Amino acid sequence: MKLLVRKLGLIEHAELDIRPLTVFIGENGTNKTWVAYSLYGLMRSLMRDNPPSLPVEHALDDAHHSTLERIRADNAAIASSLAGEGSRNLSLERDFSKYFSESSATRVLVGKVPFVRQLLRLPKSLPDVELRLEFASSEYRTKTDPVRIIVEASSRSAVSAVLRVRTSPDVEHVSFLDSRDKLRDAAWWETTLSSAFELWLSQAPGNVFVLPAERKTLASAHDLLRDEFGKVVTIPVADYAEFLGSRGRAAAYGFEAVGEFPLQDLGKLLESQVVKGTIGFTEDEEGTGFTFSPSDQVELPIHAASSLVRALAGLNLYLETAKPGDFVVIDELEMNAHPEAQLALTELVAMLVNRGIRVVMTTHSPYIVDHLNNLMAAARVAPERQDELTPHFQLKSREAFLPADKVAAFHFAPVSGKVEVRDVLNRETETIDWRTFSRVTDELSNLYGRILEAKERE
Image (cartoon, rainbow, N blue to C red):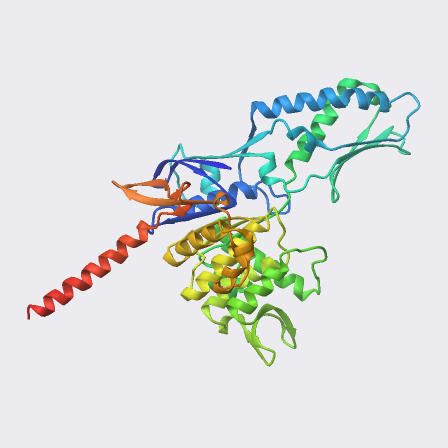
């Protein structure tokens, strides 16, 4: 993925290579969160199970159009032959993913002033702000189900046939035909198949999830919020509050998620190795409550749990139903975490990425940046020697070793009243340049030296 940012806050121009794990580092007030939230908003517009989409423009490049022509040419003859004179029920199944083996359609999502104002709830914004996210179909589709196009005879007097376009096992688009003559029209089939392709292309495989900086407070107060809350905070914050509320309502009505959720074990790992207890919604005589249990004998309301537990409670709930293909934004992963917990969280994020979750996160922590360097270095070690290293890591798993080609890191640096966004991952050494933190460490050391020198002069 490629993200182009123009005139967003203090950022005049920036181009970012968005990889499976993308890390933003830099000083406060350098628009890291705005960029992370912009990515969340753009990706949110793709996900069908989210609230109404933000005002995002969609575009497709020339490669898409050539791909579409190949689909039309390949399928029109097949469709016409299926639509013979005596056909009453037709079934055509096409696997559009094969058309991306030679050329890949690039999608472009564009967010301008209305997008930024609504996403960040800004009273006004620069008139020419623009965000462009470019990505190939292969970058956001981890699974491609064949599309089924089914024509059925109809018993309704005004309808000759029913056309069903099933773009995924759980999504079907239905239309009614007033004449079966259309089934013998090759041009109509071309239009139908191209529309089916567009529907197939629009189906994203996962969902978006965000952990905003306000998450610790929202864990305790999400069920006390009024409807007006969502109108005065950024959309990512409102979405997170709604996520907690929806999980609480589901628990109150006894609903449970059913299906294959391959990341639940990472949720258990978060509970056992980081927060040291279980998090969830439980039922008692007073109703459903959000709770934390540090042991089988103790159950605390979430507001009485430690700040680390409240900061990670939403992540734990998300992991219960997370799937490969999801897109996750985390603002300040290290929030309220002791250094050892920060290392464990860094490893957990690396494991999410290796399982197919895309993560964008902001951080001010040198521990996280240093440990990402460790994880990338460990991934370069021969597989037969990696088991020797795992006991020295917090989660004791080689699954946390992260290839550098999956990582991008950017420093948001204030320069002359503006912010420059710099790529700080050296592709030759496969390490993140952490001088943004070492400069402060050096200044502290030098300051202590001056204090000692002043002491000696007394």
